[in-house]
View 1 (cartoon, one colour):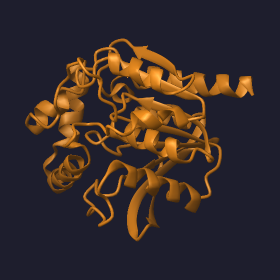
View 2 (cartoon, rainbow, N blue to C red):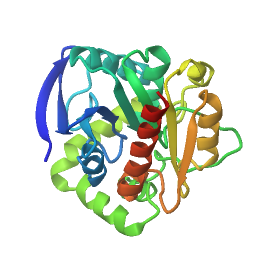
View 3 (cartoon, helix red, strand yellow):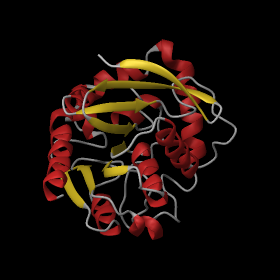
View 4 (cartoon, rainbow, N blue to C red):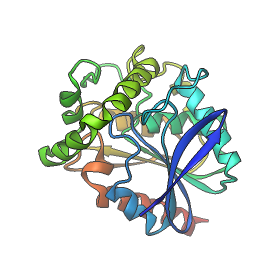
Length: 261
């Protein structure tokens, strides 16, 4: 089991879970499943020290006054990595967390050893449809993230549990502030993705209906030398739906970079 610490950074307290041993792997979670420690993290913790923070404004905490856009969270995590003295970090982000990770890497990748983006938000691909996560009730929004109904059932039961209502509401407000307009992307991000100069892996769920697979191809094209892996039988959150496969492709990718260097 991971240990949980409270870390104070930029005048706010956030919950940080840590587990495993090895080089540091910082995982930035999505907005809907959140910072729950999953089987996916257990798999990664067999090879790395996995560090899982709760985003400011999520998990029931109040949003800090400075949180207005996704780049604010990118800068926050740059500060957090410096504060924790993390070096040669394998940065992994899913959905909203992937958007944050990409923004971070365009700014300063000096502490990064690799970057993995799992069905990230952040880009807009013209002519490609998808599901608007703001257009449905909470349960429908969660179920739309999944291909497998049983995996969806488990997440619905956990995320929509009565004791989590306050945290859910606060998180929805922060997500809307960050990604409501324009929907799930920043028009300025695409022109700076060429600045990412660390080995990059894009992981995409083949059955992602929120952001269909052409989005994965767009990310691969935008980031120099990025590798794209598509996971069959997974929707928008493959790390939840196919934890072993998702962790496996990340472990393999990082191992290949070590051999190359």
